[in-house]
Length: 387
Image (cartoon, rainbow, N blue to C red; front, side):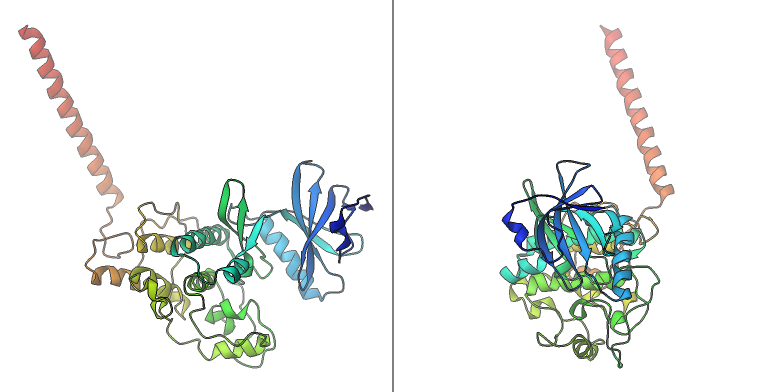
C-alpha cells in the first residue's frame, strides 16, 4: 500500500521516482531522495514500526528488461541472508502497486571509496590497510555463506562515518552476486557484447567466461588495495569513456601478464617487500595461485606489515573450517625466508604442533606444577614444626 503524506521539505522537489511524501506498505514514510543510478533510485525513509529508525529504500525503475529485474531480486535474496558488520544489511523486499520492486536496507552515512579516491588519489598506508581489512572481513562473511560478489570496485565499498565510527567499511550492491560454482561472464575475449561486473576490477577468469568462485573477489580486492596505495590499477586500462566491450577486449590482451609491482608506481613503498608479495600473489592470473580465502589474505597482510594481533577466526569459504593451522604459502613466504626472518604464520615451514603434542605439553606442565606445590607445602610444614 502506498498513500500520500503532507510535507513541505524542499528536498522533495527532486524526486525522479515520485515517492517522496508517500508511505509504502503503511510502514515506510519516504522523506528524501539520496541518489539515482542506471536502474533505480535510492530514497531515505522512516520506518514507522521502529519510530526513530531511518532506512534506505532502493526502488527499481519501470520498464527495465527482465534480466535487470531478476538481478534486483537476487540482490535482495542474497544480501537478506547475510549477516556481518561489514556488509550492508537488507531487511525487507516487496513490490509497489505499480509493479516496481524495492528493497529496504540500512541507511549508511559517509561516502563510497571512489569519492575518497577522487579527493585523495593515494591513501596513506595505514588507512588503506585498515580499509582493506574491513573489505576482506566482509568478503569472509559472504564467502562463508557461499556467496561471491563478482563486482567489487570502489563504488561498491562504502566508508561509514558517524559519531564514534570512522573508516568502517561496508560492502554494498550484491546485484551480480552468485553462489559458488556459478558461471562467469560472457566471453569478452570473443564477440560477446556484455560482461558481468566492472571490467577494470574483474579477475581474468571473469573476462574469459571461466567458472568464477570466491578467489575472483580476492583479485578485485587486491586491485582495490593497489589502487589505494599507488593511485592507479596494477595493469593498463582503456581510456575513460570507452565502451564496456571495447574496454574488456583491451584488458583481455593483458590477462596472462604477470602482476605489476607496487614499488614501480609508489617509490615511497619500495621497502614494503612483504606487502608487495601479498599483492603479487592475490593478483595472480590463475585463481589457483591466489589465496584460498579472504581470511588467509587478511592474515598475510597482517604479517606483512608486522601486526601482532591477527584478524579473528579466518574460515574457509562455505565450510566454516578454521585456517589457523594452514600457514599461507607463496611469494610472501619466500620473501620472508630470503630476508632471513624468523618463522611466522605465513611461512609454510613454520612448525605446527599437533593436538596430541599440545595435550602432552599441558599434562607435563600440570605435573610440574603439582610437584612444585608439594615441595613448597612440605617445606612450610617443616618450618612450622621446627619452631
